[in-house]
Length: 143
Image (cartoon, rainbow, N blue to C red; front, top):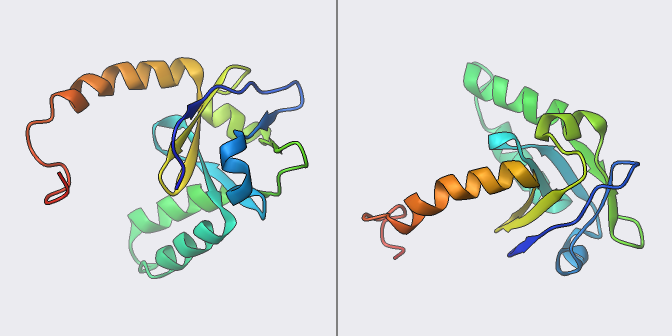
């Protein structure tokens, strides 16, 4: 499980140092791909394999499933972090997420998300109020 918020920077080669607490789980390999809200998703390779199996069950006749899979897999990049815990984010993924230098890396349960720091600040400011004001169960039976 990935938790917390971290603020690493991209270097001039498009590399990002993973938070120390995420490195062990990601060290065998990871997959970076486009996420929703213009962030990047980072999955441990084993988790991405499970997602792939689930998506494989979607009927090829379902247009929404085809569209989602095309975008997700076409933009995916597999990587093994170096000894310093650095990963290289390809230019196409950096462009998609608007990443330049200042980044925010968040733990999002089974995945890590990489955000442009300005985009994360806007997203969080917009969502925190609605989070605080939730008056019904988002996940029935959980809280």
